[in-house]
Image 1 (cartoon, rainbow, N blue to C red):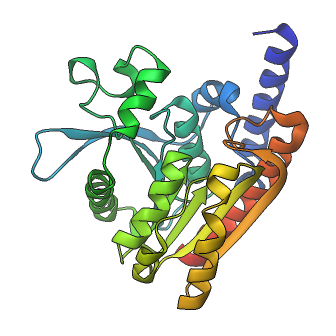
Image 2 (spheres, rainbow, N blue to C red):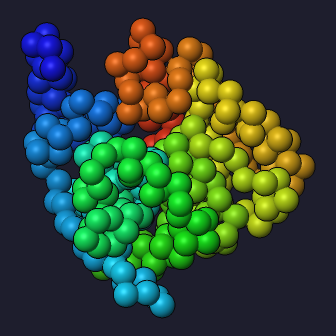
Length: 281
């Protein structure tokens, strides 16, 4: 990593730590770090983190899940973070921690739990390509079952309220939207650059959905307008924001596309927190 880039990451991390320590209310809307700064962000977080194993009904596998707790006196809503096609990474964990900074209990399950070499999870795979292949082999019904298990676990936490949301990215963005069609108890869903479900399924949605997209992402964006029209026809809540010049994965790849991804991130993250607070608090 170039020395100048390392310096920029270190300075960014120092600013985040100082802000979190000095202005906790303002820090709630700080965007998560980009991929390069995720590990340092996690290591310096003041919040409580846990790893838990969640039982899956009808299976011997258990779902390895990262949990980040907010620092607040009252009970908190639960937000399930659905990872990208790259599996459960430090970056996804940093997103979970950022949600905790904003006042939510964040649960980030590893959907590759027990599927890796030797029965391992994302970290057990030899390469990112192997992770991508394995994630793409997971069927939507399997994801729904795993999300239901995580939701039950979250609801049983003594510090949790009865409000539930999902936030997903890329592959996880599509799963976040699809889960809203499968789980009527879901209160809110956030879709970061994920494809929309078949419009025939949208009538089942009760959650308020927020979609956040990069302008230069035709594969995903071509699925958005049909969903917008159908959701409007059904009288359901689906708010979308598309950010000029930003590409797929903009929240993780903030340093790319000559500032467009960073600008999109600075707008999308506060919109995410506002959406969650509106529908969960």
